[in-house]
Image 1 (cartoon, helix red, strand yellow):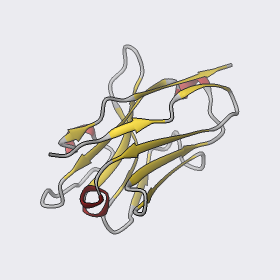
Image 2 (cartoon, rainbow, N blue to C red):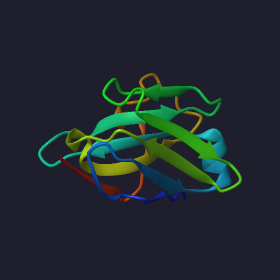
Image 3 (cartoon, rainbow, N blue to C red):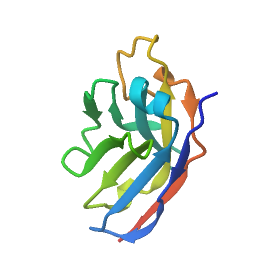
Image 4 (spheres, rainbow, N blue to C red):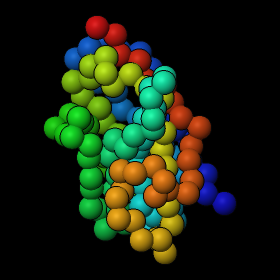
Amino acid sequence: QVQLGESGGGSVQAGGSLSLSCATSAHVLGSYWMGWFRQAPGKEREGVAAIGRYGVTSYADSVKGRFTISRDTAKNTLFLQMNSLNPEDTAMYFCAATPPFKAVWRPLRPNEYDYWGQGTQVTVSS
């Protein structure tokens, strides 16, 4: 069973930074496609960043240059470093994973992923 546990959300002023964490198992972190998604009230869930088993990364245009996805195999944790936050980044952020036997063609599409965490709230005030 794949378990994903997000943490690190909170409230920050515009221009600030937050680092989100997603704790999982070594097997998932090392071999699954993993991604960060967000969903604001009244909006569809959207992909923010993703990383494949060989380290290939993808970012939404809206976060390129500001967000960085990474993983720490020693800690069994996926990270999302978010800098230069603005109010449009306010949303519930979710960690997701999909097994390696599935071909992932569009890693920022939510329906590519089979497993989801409970989410962590990020609120950016102006």
